[in-house]
Amino acid sequence: MAAFAFFLVLLLALLAWAWLRQQPASGRGIALLKLGAVLAIPLFGYLALSGRLHIVGLLLALAYPLVRRFGPALMQRHKKVSGAGQQSTVTSRILEMSLDHDSGQMFGRVLEGPLEGTSLEQLEEQQFMELLHYCREHDSDSARLLETYLDRRFGESWRVDDRDDDSHENSTGASAGSSDLTREEAYEILGLSPDASPEAITRAHRRLIQKLHPDRGGSAYLAARINAARKLLLG
Image (cartoon, rainbow, N blue to C red):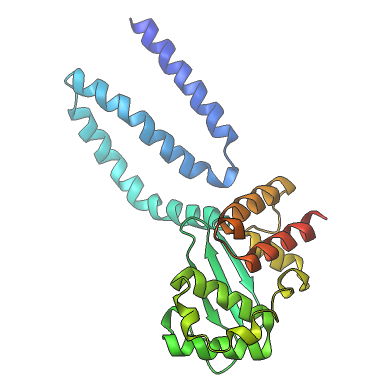
């Protein structure tokens, strides 16, 4: 029985070591914590069945100072590493807009005009209409970007108050894909760092298109920007 238990522990240790080696170097700290949590479940069960739960209290007492000291730093590092692939940023002349990949929520701020520096989440309905009119007068890409934000936040209801929609609905349609992008902007649109591999670019493009394609209720403007970003980075 003891030999079997030793063999099982050795096998689990080898599997855990192989799994850790496959994780990105920057994420191995978090991977190690996850692995420890998974292994703790059968260990807890064994100790409970064998009447040795007091050992759990001892282990927790020993682990608490370490978790308190290094836990926040590891979590902050995890946020920095994982956050790069979970948020896309699109910047136009008047607006900077970000999309959270997980929730699909958009948030942004005004870069130019009477409302410069204002977060979109702080604006009231009339201010949105004024901002939209300003964007349509000065930059068609910004107008399309704001329309996308309004659609995702309010659905179609905002269009009831959009008095000049008919006069502008065709003026901004072709600009999204034709605007020049820099490589930096393309990486921001896909939510990637500049050292991303071609495979990572392809995966990010596929994931975003699945969420934002017009046929799935997404935005034609953002889909065009995402496609343009992929084309620029992959050629």
